[in-house]
Length: 73
View 1 (cartoon, rainbow, N blue to C red):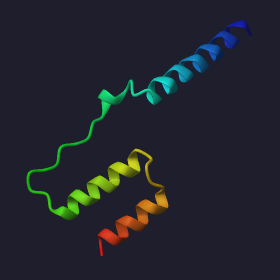
View 2 (cartoon, rainbow, N blue to C red; view 1 turned 30 degrees about the horizontal axis):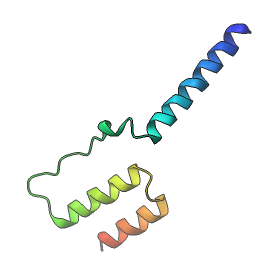
View 3 (tube, rainbow, N blue to C red; view 1 turned 90 degrees about the vertical axis):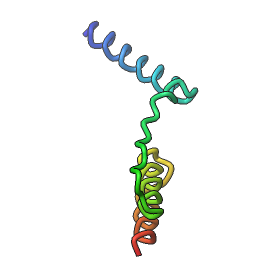
View 4 (cartoon, one colour; view 1 turned 180 degrees about the horizontal axis):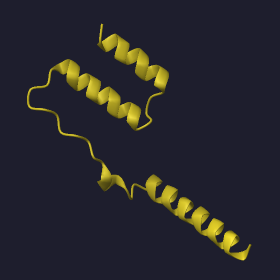
């Protein structure tokens, strides 16, 4: 039982440190935005930006689906 408590405390502490570092921008250098292809259309670029915003959690799945449908009309 003693090892379980230590393991749980370590995992919780690690999660707290990770979240604190993430909020302070400590992981900002890890932005891996893909480079656009040489011949992308404005529509392709708009879809790429929309997908990136969704992946970052800036928009909800419903907003993403609605905006993607508008772009593909």
